[in-house]
Length: 124
Length: 197
Image 1 (spheres, chains in turn cyan, orange):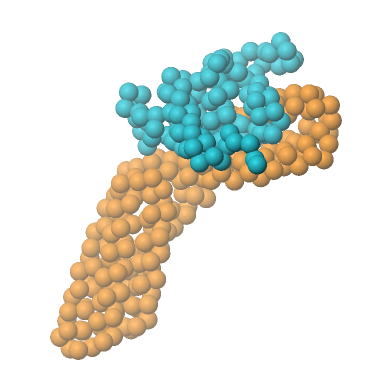
Image 2 (image 1 turned 60 degrees about the vertical axis):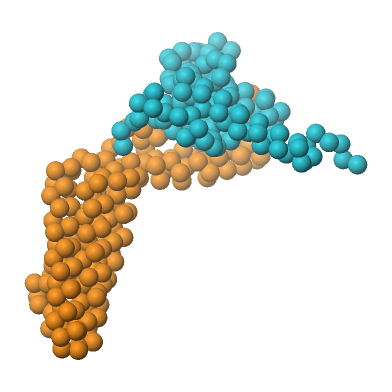
């Protein structure tokens, strides 16, 4: 199936995102990263409760690359880890728009949950 | 490193095209993760196993679909001629079914002829649906064509058993043609076409 033109793509059409996909886009929102750095970022953000294994990570990255939400930047070594060259990934402008749309969708849900006192209220 | 060798074995659960593109990166991530954790331990391995079990089937299904679609696309011209023949033969079966039902069932009040005519109509309609699915190169066209072809085959086998006087030509057309559709689709799946991940 031919890919749709960038200008025709509506971010809301891609929603809802899977939790893994949103976590990856979130990790890439403030700069490019390689795969292991994305895994580490997700684990640290979730304070250890959310873990993204290599299979889920690269499976999601493959689909994100195919749908044009993420692109490969280049291959270089990470001085913090070792001297092995790693592929770096960055979010595209469409990927950023999709991540923003998903964040708004989740925000609406969280506000609804708060209004029904499911969160933000101390148990009696 | 033993752990890495075990993980490399686990990676065989993923399709080849995916491994070609990401195996090295996944091994690098595994190595960095193992180094940061000190020792993976039973819990770490369970998490890795769960990760593979959760992600590999979906990627295998993706690769299978891509292979199927690529096969149908690659053999475009042949497939188009085959799809048009499927629609034409389906239409002939449909008309034959109407004629059989009308002449035998309504004209001679023969219930068996009426049933055979109805089955031939179902078979013809199913074959037309299969041909149209192949012609449109729709997403998952293979499955959309295979199901009606199987329905057509089933309907014609029942019709042939119910009415032994059915002509050899129409029996062959009604049974052999949907079988050919299924065979073409199955061969595409088995032979496969390399897919860039």
